[in-house]
Length: 511
Image 1 (cartoon, rainbow, N blue to C red):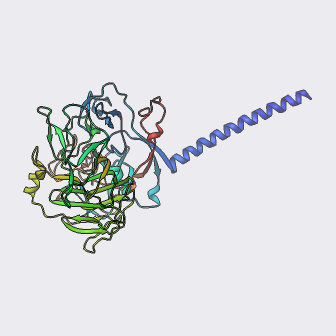
Image 2 (image 1 turned 90 degrees about the vertical axis):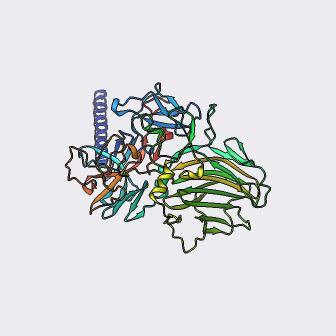
């Protein structure tokens, strides 16, 4: 009997082992099926999509202002970190020789999604590179089949009209200009925001404890963009350019190459008096957008002006007295954008002003001659009126608190004729360059990298030894899928965890 029980136990153990092996085999089969037909993981090798997605890079905390940013590795030297980088918030040149080098973000891609639904503009998608079909590339989709695309002053234009971004795409494409929450301490630093007497710095922001004494007068906070002069290191007034801290390891110009006038200002504001009004003013070249934000219940409406013309107003006001309110105001893509606590307030718009699908006010830019634009673009260390941009915050009518001021620029897609993009030299005119619109055919897509100076994409194709008659497009048959989630961001960069452990603070959706 004991012998029979022993044999029975051996049989059960063997069956259990077989069941376990079977389960493992089934799991592997399902995993391979899942990978082949539903979701696949990819590693980002380069910085062409930075800062949305990082390639091989280091994480840097500025030794002066404390701003955190990523710096790409020098791929030409075997993915090695350079000796120095430049903080995009305060332009301090600092050493990065002792920092760890991390591999690129790991992402999940929905495969075959585009077999069931068409790609949408601003999707971040993976595809087989038409130049080298065995390589997978990842870029942002900007041009769809049968459209005529042209890159004009950094904007994507489709059939002669600016392509307006979705909110999620825009959030991903804001690039830091300056954030007062990260204040430099070095002696030669010159503050970016210059206050009138009524405004005083407090903490990371500014306060206006009393309104200007003159009736109806506005006290201003004026932004002044400054960069170090390469000759002597002194800070000089400058236009806002397309600088990427991520690229500062590769010998790119300190401040960028293209003038950026599409700007957004993030702040948190508290009105301490129902009569107070906060004004936010942007000038890009000769176009001006102004937001006058008033308190809920105020007799003074909240208004939006474009080139001194009233475009929209909300009689009830949009800010709550005594409550901190998040505000985003922007002059971007020839639109006036206002977002309060994450939503666009209901501002009846004059019928003369069209709006985007999001409700942002569209305006037609005032004429600007090439000579006058050149004068704006070449301005350096001159008065703000001579610069390409002005940004000003104002207050009147009562005390106001600003918790911080963060100024961002929009992505600028380089493609002007005669401009050198990264290390790639191509003949002009390039496809979709300004004045040279490119017609897409059925089943063709146009893609660009978020890191425009360092992205090898449709603007630069074909690249030898590809056939000279190859069209600079991604064919439908080359599409792999849509990137949707960073599941393993740069490891050990924010919490001091081991390098092999993913950092959950970096988990995020891809937009």
